[in-house]
Image (cartoon, rainbow, N blue to C red; front, top):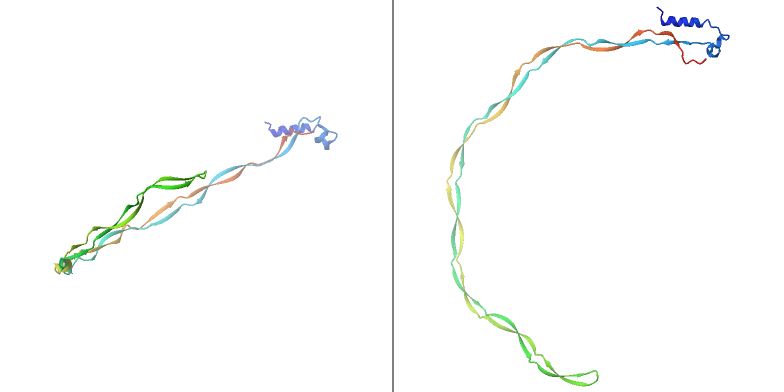
Length: 247
């Protein structure tokens, strides 16, 4: 079976039979009219592929863990002071009573009151009025005497009027009392007993709910993935047809 490389080699062998008078410039311009196809020798790159491989990042291990004890504080009542009875001496209680005491008896005295005089103003006629002659000169120089009516004249006159005459008035003075404070015994002195209850306080004590223990924990290995480039196909050289040549 013929491969692609064998075909290209045969074509190149057939082309080598064509002669050109100027071999140095055959690919430039000398043999363009006799050329059927051209091939170039090219470099083929290597082909790589990425391969994932498992990698142990951390190996399996065994860890010993110490679990601490669980301790809780619980309250309980403690007697701080016992019950006791004490005596309380209370003094006597006194109160003050107020009493009225006569200081000055009632009496009657007389006072002379003067007369009450009030000033009154009244209007009196000082001139009764009537008819009087009045002399005047007109614009024409003629002197005239005219009888004119004169109004009456009045004046305000003040005079004192006795409103209330002088008199003797009896004045009563009430009796005078004062309050006298007198101490009175309300409750005598005595002794009473008072019971003081016992006093308690709250204390705390530690109680172990769960003792300390040791636990063994197995940790599995940690597996990671690494990526690596692997050569799939090696490169080299190959003949490739040149379609865009200029000859």
